[in-house]
Image (cartoon, rainbow, N blue to C red; front, side):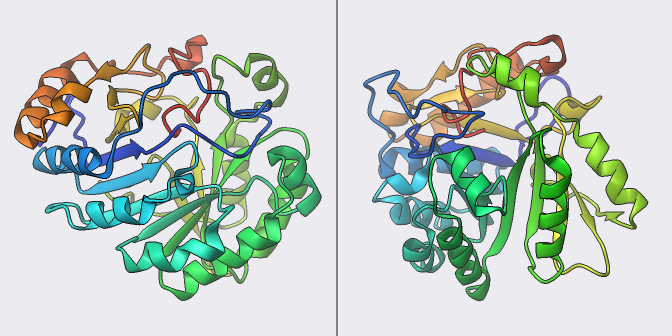
Length: 322
């Protein structure tokens, strides 16, 4: 089992397959995607080597992320490669859902277990303003199809201070009958969004207090789960999760590592730079790659230091998939 110097064990790999995104979300890429390098993304074979190496180290869950992973035409092949990796028990994809109705069947057939879709508002006009795309009904149709196929589905919503309460009420109404997990994620400061963060940050603890007051109950957290604290309520078909990276001791439960689409190991979302593994990945030697990762894990810091205003090398979240 892969363990760092602070006693944390890592069951969960977030593997970015591209840093390209077709949305222009206010808090991430308000001016749209701009290439910052000319390096190729990991091929399916290279990604498979990465997943085999991490599986040897105890990883049980792989999440394919971006950017927007559906922009890769071979994403179904990547999902299949993950599903066929010995030791990997759960395969997940995080997407903006733009292509979802046309691709979800193939994803599920190739082994997708879990889907996360980003929806910051259920108001179609507000959604279009935030993302730059007027496509919310299409995304909701894709979610309905994912649920029909039995894919565990979660919806990510970034907490924004302006209009937070009306958005919360809309989401609660939706969760009455929709069996998804809605995860509220605190807005995080990155190198590109400092002013936006200062104007729009809302503490997740404020929403969490409301939920507890209204009868929502905290669930136990599986060892390969993400960082959310999930709540259930007997009157709701859906669940609510809170991801609060500015809360005390948030990093104590860290169980995930990240590989960028260019083959760099990021020990933290907010580390100063990725550790280049591309040459080892290209050898197709999963054993050698596993040993290299094991040697590097000792460099993982105890915290992301977001509370001190640290953003590391993360200019925006599309770079390594949040």
